[in-house]
Amino acid sequence: MEIAASQVKELRIKTGAGVMECKSALAEARGDFERAVAILRERGMANAARKAGRTATDGLIVAYVHPGGRIGVLIEVNCETDFVARTEQFQALTKDLAMHVAAMNPLYLRREEVPETVLAEERRILQVQAAGSSKVPEVVERIVQGRLEKFFVETCLMNQPFVKDPGRTVEQVIQEAISTIGENIVVRRFCRYQLGEASDDNSPMS
Image 1 (tube, helix red, strand yellow):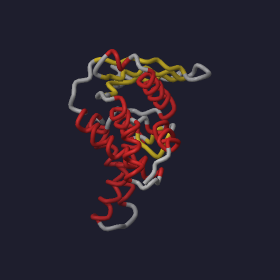
Image 2 (cartoon, rainbow, N blue to C red):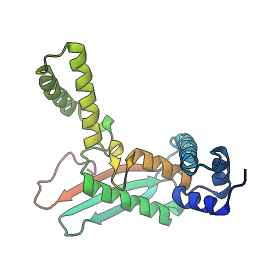
Image 3 (cartoon, helix red, strand yellow):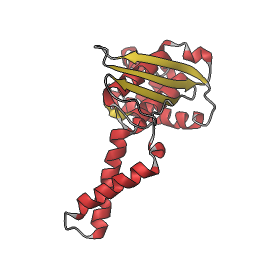
Image 4 (cartoon, helix red, strand yellow):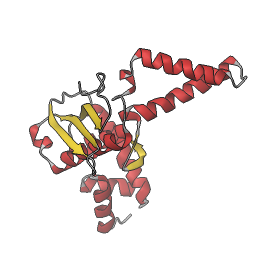
């Protein structure tokens, strides 16, 4: 089918994919724009998975102070080369991630980094709460697991809905950036400061 140049341009703006990739996705989707976006994202995730094992030792440390001066963030985001670190797209991504940390206040980078002591205490509290529902043990355990997932979404940066696009997680945003930029990208650590709060010795930036 005939693919209009205006459709290709719009899809490129939305996804950052190349001209031929956009044409191919639109053709596969038979002109359905949203389906073409989904196809590009699916392909991007596959490409990103192949790049994820590559070493990322360059990048940027970005500082962000929220208007009003009461919240500040330091975040280190790594890529593979200095060339990519200096690109507008990578710098925009790091700024967006810093703004997200300021707004959503994650406590940990990813779920694997939640201390076992914290996880055990959270599970204990959830089990006590669920046990009061008079449900059978199997149902109680499913309730606990579901609430633990919610805990990870609320406290772990990579699992949080991205503040600028809640339909995607932070991890998905980074994976899509990997697919369009062409290098592995890793959030290494971050630290969030709020005026008047005591410092946290377990900060991910330490």
